[in-house]
Image (cartoon, rainbow over all chains, first blue to last red; front, side):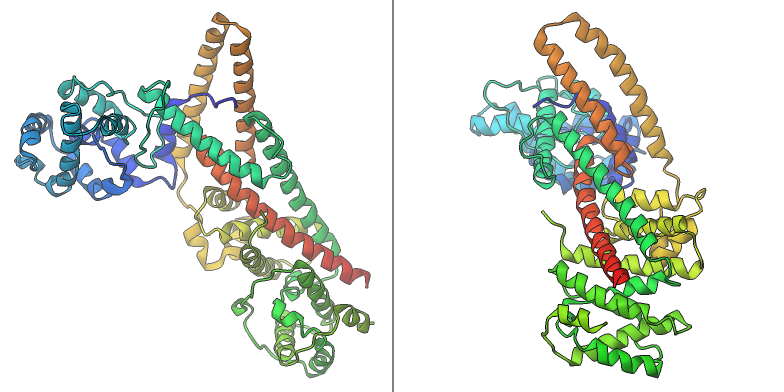
Length: 351
Length: 188
């Protein structure tokens, strides 16, 4: 299956400017330079995407902190690794509570990397490395600089800007595959895409036999275009078919019917006759109608047919509101009658 | 995978409401105007059935209610009280900038890429480059089809396509049954 071309950059602007993108992403991108916490975030080991959310307001605060504090913080880090406690520098007071979480994580991550397999097994170590490379490095550029300063011994410090900002992804490089962050990120992306393409394959008819992204995309495009054309055609048809309705909203509304009431369809005839003569006033508000699940479209069709015909009758009424209420009144009356006679008989009985 | 009946019903309900509001504002429309009103209310009803959870629905409503278009009042009427929430008043300047950035980067990449492929010209590389080009062209077409698709990355584009296809199917089913019913009624 041909892979999509690897485009690292477009995702970044997308993530910033998408209306529904989490605000923390845009916040991060703006505070690239002044972000102190880049250090910790580069070492997020566990794949907890929402661990960052409590820290978001902190980041905006941290951006105001100046370089001196940044240096102080990075100096403190080695000591922190030994102490495994939160930083006591005054500058990072605000960040403390939030940082505590990241610090512990950071430290465990660091430990694993510093002491290769001392206390952990190799699998975990590898996971740590890869988890870190796949971690959400939202302040990528600053991260890179910071990392070069403090963690020269870390191999996988390459940034992964192409990663979608959806959370931390934990990836294990398979045997015989490249382990650098770029290819890992690309592989994750490709897997996501192929996963979704498979779902689309099931959805779009005729896509099962097709293999390959290009052909599948072609089928999908054709299908979407055909659906859109169908909508256009059907709306034209509806506009054409209902030219005489002075208020097509009412008549179309007449076709709304619940399947429960479908069985008692035989009753509308007599009840409608009565209603016609009485000129009912407004019964129920149209917006308060509730629908039961309509599982059978044929029933909807036939019942709608009956109601539409009834809807055609109220030309005699001057006000559209009466028509709507008339129909709802009919429905209410119908509910009292439970008739399971064939719908065909009802159709014939109209003439 | 047929669309859920709850979606169909919600769509039908909103559509009828929208049609009523349309017709109450303007009587004696020509057939084309009627068709446009029907389609617009159907689209807006479908999009509002999603309640702002998907990107395409928001984009559709935003496009329909652009200040320049004359459908804006119609849309606002159809949506009713929810219109304030659903219509994005703010111009997505960021999205436009992002689009330009993407396009310029793509142009750059394309110009670099051509040079690259010419250097290594074995058959396999050629085939994959052709395939890649095809895929890229088709994603571009798909982006033009899905409302608001130009600003999405590939992954979310596919998700939006999924949702859009399901909604379109529901819309088509409901409209078709309604059309057949009206036809039936008119013949009788």
